[in-house]
Amino acid sequence: MYAYDQFDHAMVASRNAEFRDQVERRLKGELTEDEFKPLRLMNGLYLQLHAYMLRAAIPYGTLSADQMRRLAHIARRYDKGYGHFTTRQNVQFNWPKLSDTPDILDELAEVEMHAIQTSGNCIRNVTTDQFAGATADEVADPRPYAELLRQWSTFHPEFSFLPRKFKIAITGASADRAAVKWHDIGLVLKQNDAGEVGFEVSVGGGMGRTPVIGKVIRDFLPEKDLLSYMEAILRVYNENGRRDNKYKARIKILVEAMGADEYARQTEAEWDRIKDAPIDVPEEEAARIKAFFAPPPLEVLEETNASVDEFASKNFLFASWLNNNTNKHKVPGYVNVTISLKPHGGIAGDATAEQMELVAALADAYSQSEIRVSHEQNLILPHVPVKDLATIWADLDEAGLGTANVGLITDMIVCPGLDYCALANARSIPIGQAISNRFDDMKRIQDIGPLKIKMSGCINACGHHHAGHIGILGVDRKGEESYQILLGGSGAEDASKGTILGPGFDEHGIVDAVEKVVAVYLGEREEGEEFLGTYRRIGAQPFKEALYGTH
Picture 1 (cartoon, rainbow, N blue to C red):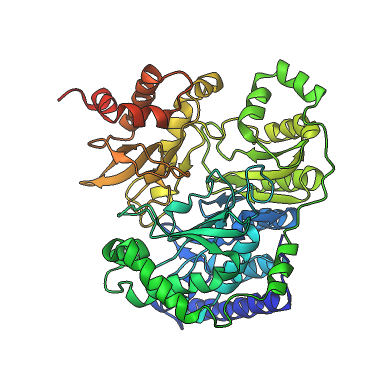
Picture 2: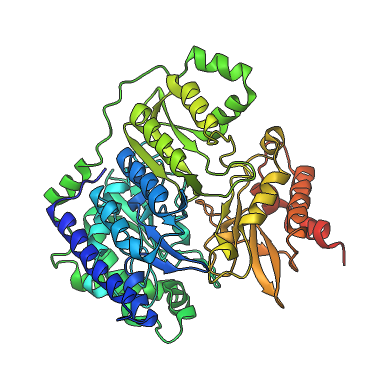
């Protein structure tokens, strides 16, 4: 993973010292909350319903074991003993004292972490495939390019005050595990007919009150031109994006208004104007950054292990975990292990300090001291030898981290909702827990098969409900919490928007509604057909009839 150079260390230290002064002035009453707000947001500090929340960046979702230990320490010392991993591969601390936040940032800086640009109208944390550099279906590791984008975008003077927040995702794999089409800019690494590496570029994706799937504006961009082309896209947005209405300020609104062809034309024209300027990095600098992401020296091993297979034959839960929570590695004899942060009845994305420390220890012992965070709020141990899987699962299971539900109905994305968020209209966490408890049977959820539930407590869509096979949106109906159900969304390479089926349900009815939707699927599916395939084949009507009757 990337290691800070002298400039990185100096930059973060300078920002932290500046923020410490701002906090002291706020505590003394020298700054009002309105004056302090833009300053704290530039440093990832939000004011939630009950307390401040600090969001720390995990660039492209990659952590070292030592960094995870530091997150555990911060959770224990400055919070209530846990952290929350998010859909942008970041981590949030929900209960820090304002007076402690400068110390937290200094503690993060000691392990080369920060909270810069995790909030505000800027380019946010660039996200990638959680298996980047370790998966068999990959053209190239996207993380070096994500690091280039991080360095280019951090404190970029032209893009430090955009019309609205801006999100970029990049994947190098054939299977899109980064939801690139739902981002302001989505990048897919490709090879052209000559074997050269480049990018398919899409723009204008996003969720929220106006969900839009990104449009491809360039089929192939040579890798050497990445930064200058990104600069051109951002310049067109910065110049033309609306600043009079925050609900119409995202690039998706501009692309829809202009049309993708016109946005592409203006981007190409701006790119022609600037591409010969010294924006793109020299080859030697690109090579220097790529060297930080060189694959670990893994010895090829046997792809199966007799003791692991024997244990799986005797233990249904371990066998389920092998099937659901491991992903094929590019080197024979290894897998990527996904650690579910969705225990049955638990809070999606939360991990205690003790659990984080265990994951760090396992990373040191079995995965080259490396950890990943997925946008689906789980943790990953890459580069794990197959022979060690039974030992790893036993340790995880003892710590409440052995749930074998990755990709299944209880592996939900759930935003913090009205339990924490000042913007929310409804609670999300208890609804997610109730659904998890309703489907608390491993044989049942395995029979249901791959099914993604995504839930948001308001229209801002932090829970990605538009991209859920089953999406749930919490709304306020005359002071009462109500939950709309959407079907047919996808965040994968076949990206699609979910469709609202009808009126909402109360907190008890929504759990019954999910069960009725699943029952229709089980009754209608064809051999080997997954939920999304069945929905696309039979349409919404059978599900509507099950939920609302024939009227």
